[in-house]
Length: 87
Image: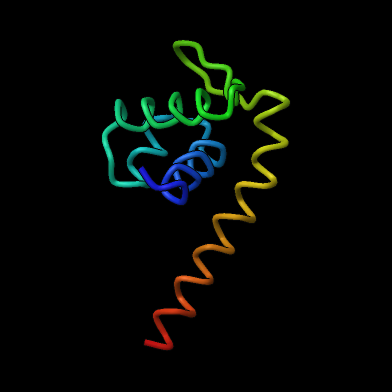
C-alpha cells in the first residue's frame, strides 16, 4: 500500500472521526479502513486513535501526526497535479 494512500485514509479519519464516514469518503469498505489505520499505527509504532464502540478520537500522538500528515498529503497531491499538467 502506498504511503500517500495511507496518509489519505488517516487524514480522512482524523477529519471525520468516524470509520464509516471516512471509508465512504475514500470509496473503501469500513473494514479496509480499519485495517489500513491499524497497519499505519503498527508501522509507526504508536497509537494514533482511541477507539470504542461509538467514538473515535485522536491521541496526542495522533494530533501531532495529523499536522504533518495533512500537509504532506496535500503537498503530494499538488505535486501529482503539477506533474499531470506538464505531461
